[in-house]
Length: 192
Length: 192
Image (cartoon, helix red, strand yellow):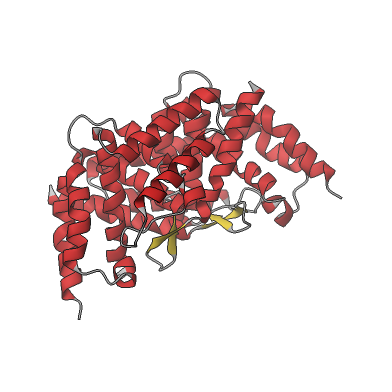
């Protein structure tokens, strides 16, 4: 039992490093968000917005998925949605990170969380699709709150925003997209 | 439906401010932890360590509780465990904060989350007692990882640590206390 707890604690203390992974989005106060506080914020989004998900999702499972979804960034880093990324290389790096990180856990538990992370990445089950939609829905709201954030940094206009984000958010959370779209449209077309 | 979502989003964006509340504990890299990333780390502790809880807890509920447990600090601030605090004034400030923050939500949802937060604070149900024990178990592990952390800042010796923390951690998570005690003992008595 002690060896089992040793392994669990090694994983949890390694996970602490997610607090040092910096994202492209800014919080209210202008500081760049880190991936640990982002994961908390997303889990809270799920807790509060679960009623807007398509029927049939398991919200407790969505929350667990969101708590672990970014851990691979400890090794692979964060890929900003408006940046240029070699997606094949990124997927390979994230897979290796998942194997290493979840491999710190007792084998049964590591396999379970690795499968949950892979389900999120594959973005096919209702739980994963809703979780992914929230992951795309939260940053535009931070950009609105911080006066532009990554839209300003990456020179993003409304058509680019809509082309990149609409399919991802609408797929798992159509009501949230309908709420968000006019707000972002007003913000991005109202600027100089 | 739109008014309901407006209220939920007002709450979620106000919650963003928890990322700016600084705790007395340091992460691996020496930076002081904020209460949002702390809440994420605790929810992950619950997810991974649930099997060490006394029987009969509802882990999904514990996770929801931990996700919201520190929101009141947005108004009331964080009270370090080894600091001097006027507990009556703090409890009053936190109650007012909870009323304001959960009051941003649609009434049914606000009442539900306020009750969940109050259950955590009252520390009587098995779910709350386990959640509180995790909240006390995580910081010593960060202190061990960061070379002393708040023990150094507050000049804490082992008897003080044990008197302050043992009852709180052992109550909801005796196996975690048994694992932690010798590690902290070795660290705090092995120093100069």
